[in-house]
Length: 149
Image (cartoon, rainbow, N blue to C red; front, side):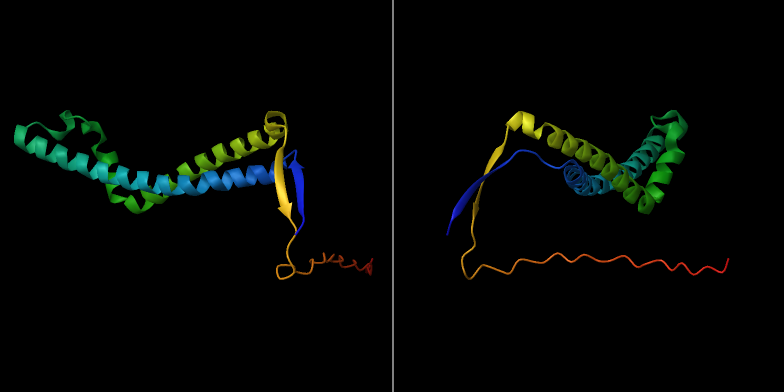
């Protein structure tokens, strides 16, 4: 088994951006779903609190805190099946943007900040060796030039 030491001096930009976008999108999607569920639950809790406070104090609901937002809170509570996915996708896209920008920044500054990273590569043993895959090039179909004109 032979060992080779190699240095990585740069990272390609597009794979770094795509990797950063996916790594930002997936966790943000789950966090956004949880945030949407919490928002829907909080809207229902606020409505219930306002109803009880209005009943016990005898004050109209419109005069209580969030009284002018009763319709909006009711919509968020009733349309939870829209609010949760919408919040998830919105936060997922924000996370993807942040991840893509982070990936681009890392790819752009990789060589200047770290100089290079040393990687040790070992040659595969007899049992681990596989035949190298041959790259197959596909030919494009020729266009037919038979025209009726």
